[in-house]
Amino acid sequence: MSAQMKILSAGPALTLQDMGRGGYLSQGLTRGGAADTLALFEGAALLGQSPEMAALEMVGMGGTFEVTQDTVIALSGARMTVTLDGAPLAWNASHLLLAGAKLVIGGVQAGTYGYLHVAGGFDTPQVMGARSAHLTAGVGAVLGAGETLPIGQAKPARSGYFLAPSDRSKGGVIRVLETVQTQLFSSETRERFAATTFKRDARGNRQGVRMDTETEGFFAEGGLSIVSEVILPGDIQITGDGAPYVLMCECQTTGGYPRIATVLPADLPKVAQASVGAPLLFQFVTLEEAIAAEKRDRAERKGLGAHLQPLIRDPHDISDLLSYQLVGGAISATADPFET
Image (cartoon, rainbow, N blue to C red; front, side):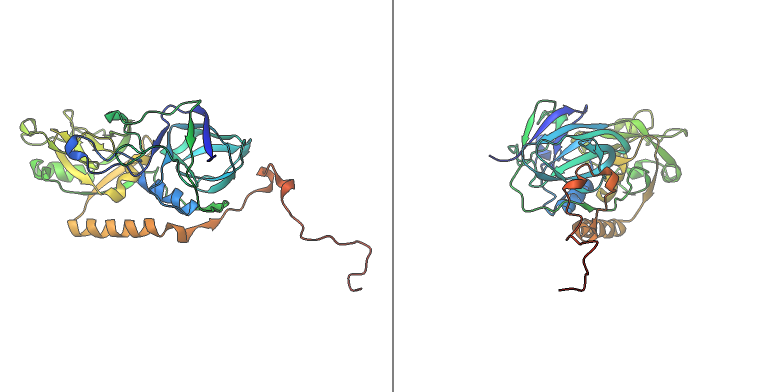
């Protein structure tokens, strides 16, 4: 019988996510998938497996989990409190999870979306080529206590490794490109938009994140006459009150609000993980600069495995310390060590 993970308790927005499903935009379905795709690559690097494998996405808090067979897990994305049978664990690291042990993932400490990965990935049935839940489209559902997830066959995975995280919770500079509608905004409005430091509003989810500012709103000339057309994750729509919204992985496929810019895919994880109140500054780049940035980002994601470090644990936090072979041999206090 294959290994399974039992969900003993669950946070308010626990879902299964992978890289999402492509090819359905014309049918009204965006790709969806993990809000922070970089976190999938981080977890995959820690476990030595494909980033295409599904992981649990946790928002706000995680839950309590148990496996039926010994397996190796990894934690990535937003840092949350986590213990294994009461002993604290390191985030952005891989750990051995013994059968029957209680893994408790609590509240978020920094960021928005945390991820729990298992060696072999979660082997649930695919729907339209993916295992991810797309809640706004009615595909999949929020997971709750009492549910069980099958775990796929895994290659031997080593626990006890750490990957230095890129702190995406603090916001920062977000690179953007002009859209076909950018010129609908006056040069003064565009310059003011690029010079404004926004704050990540509390109003945000997998569909979009609102940007807050104390300055006046941003409005397009003739914005009310714009025809609804195709939109994509990363597009920055300006709503009726002049506030920018960055569209995220579960956004709609068409929209009529004017778009002042589009966030580079490489920087979307920073928008997704920005903590409420984190500062965000949008910086326009050229198409050539954007292409170069995307190439660098893809290369860095593929090369994450080369940056793994052994995880050094504090003996005070090792509940099963006595089970380790700490002495390689026995010596006598009275015998002459030089006698044969």
